[in-house]
Length: 127
Image 1 (cartoon, one colour):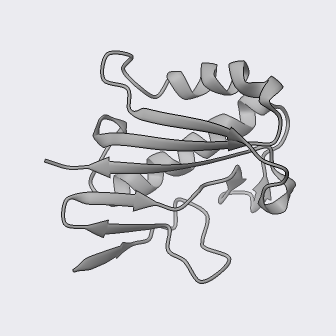
Image 2 (cartoon, helix red, strand yellow):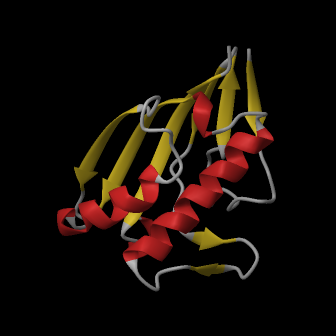
């Protein structure tokens, strides 16, 4: 059985997918980009600001499922320029306890939706 998670506090899907799916105690989020639902605009000022908006969107999805970043067990980060890795990592790291940080991969890709610079998805487990 799966439960669709949807919140107005994160970007609405722009295709045939959900913001997240809860299956049992495991939450699978769709990738989030730096879309600000309050303004209806992408936040692309700089890579740190963009990453923070992505993380805030993920936070809203986690909260809609009754979870926090402490429940995250795995993340996938897709970036358009590996030279931005350190700056992305700096912001990303502010959302996790270093002692309990999730597993992760970071992959450079040729292009992301809406030509953003970073997209992140997560898997979280509530025990």
